[in-house]
Length: 382
Image 1 (spheres, helix red, strand yellow):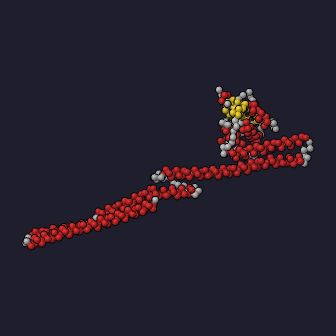
Image 2 (cartoon, helix red, strand yellow):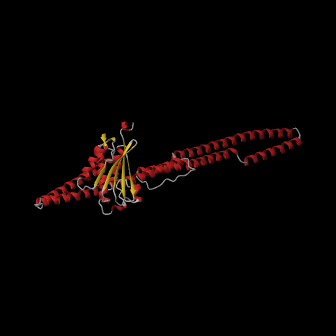
Image 3 (cartoon, helix red, strand yellow):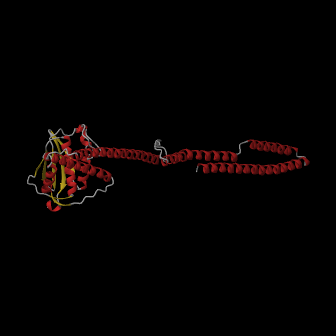
């Protein structure tokens, strides 16, 4: 576009110069021919007057002819308007081109170069926003797009790093119980379980470690699919109180540290049984790992929802960690040397929201309480 505009400017300037020169030459020729005719006529008159003896009038004619010739010479030496008009037109057109180039073509070229840089993957150079620019809003939009792409790339890089971290962490966590299982199996193979009590203890530990591996595998599986929104929820009608009582008893069977209080609550919900078990296991195992106290589980019915409460009596979660505690891979300041991937509470929140519920955490003076709210079946609210 810039080359075309320059060519048009040069062509227009040449045309104006040629036309002005033509008009100038033509005008001079016409004027010279007319003047010569007038001079010949005037000289003939002077000659006739001299022949007739009228010297006085002949002198007057000679004086008038001299004045005309002097005036004509002055006009020739004066400024011709045609070349002036030509120069003014050329200057105007050059000025117009300069304005168009500075106000339109140059910013357009900058945006074109910027787009080429973006297409090549270079997001380091910002595009300065200028209010006086005709493309000011486009410039702002382009630079906003650049910033958004920079943020997306940073988030993508962070997500990749997080994926690597969680896979490495879960791989490490899986190795630990597997090593224990191997050790106890080798001990049994060496007949170190000499008594019935030792054998039962070995088998109990092996079973518990197998459950740990299964839970870590569930974490890894959920981590792999949660971002893709492919987690399936299969809701069914559940009487929540009796179901949770059974689930808590199974979880507490090994250590007898979890106590369920039914509180005479009857409530029916549409939920996925396996996901409810997953929620309970994550919250109870978190309390076991970090609080290391007994855990109370109870239900409360409130209008058209039922709330599941998981209460421990440990040190709770620092207040500064609370806004981020449900974030993926996040671990609080009080985790200490406990191993973990930062997925437990994220999984609880993710699964609960998939079942149209909510989960909150509350610190008490002596402990932490997790509250999972689930909507009741429609007929229960009537």
